[in-house]
Length: 411
Image 1 (spheres, rainbow, N blue to C red):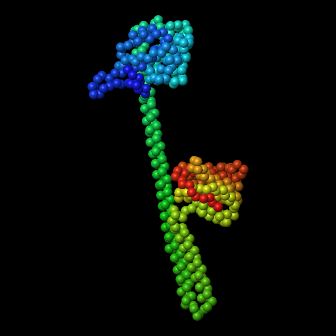
Image 2: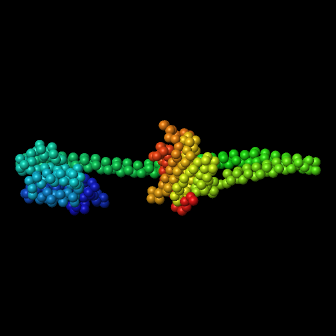
């Protein structure tokens, strides 16, 4: 039988002719490693023609440990090695056992150690030190005992290869299942993100409805009051010039107030997805905070890729929350804000450090807790801790799955 007919991934190879429906033949690879040619002849004579666990033997011969190692390298699916201890060296067989088990990593092949000089390799010492299946002296290995030893070794090999195949199959199924679960987890995370963005859309819509009500109530009331003043002024024309002037001035103020309310409302009602801009919104937030809170904010903002609506709002929210907490709870007057983008691993590094007080124990309040939830929803991480020199530092790492390079840094 040719070597190509033996499948190295299986313990045995089935050779079948489906059309002729002939009986399936099974073969077990059997290596005889001994420097005595007569041992090869006698072993084959005794075992040839016998069936072991529904299969026959395919014989391989090696006359030294080096030759045996080469055969085992070419045929890792050899079931049994009948191995002599003394060949080119006194312990050549023992060295081969170590090589097969440790270097080749072959734990399945059954090794029957056979020696004609038991004094050089005492059985109790060999069995304890080497991973072998059996130990036989050449004088005691009769044809009957040889047959029994080979049969039990093949049976053990068959069980072990079955267990190994089942283990490999189980590992493959675990890997496939793990990949499926990871894919589902990614889909679920994407669904959660889409749901969160949808919630943001709903929040924006609710805010617009509120602004619309304000326009109807506040602006409408202001303009109505202006009309009343104008009507009163008309009736006073030619009667009381001072009061006419007063009414006109008041009406003018009311109209200006109404116009300011309308401009503000229209600005807020504009489509945020079209008007959102990270550079502009961060600059406006920094400028307004410095003007209204009397603090100084030093900025280092690297060029950013084109970001989604979700990421822009998240970064602006993070800066606003960090500034507010630093001013309100830490009494901070100076901040150092840094926003960097690592194109290699496609993630944004956010850092806001202040010079405020460091509390003995601090916990996430409602605002920071909500910010942390948003960051985790975007698969990022948030850390708030004492800065190296003084004050507190808020750090955020935000990965970008589909960022597109192309925007410029904040001036």
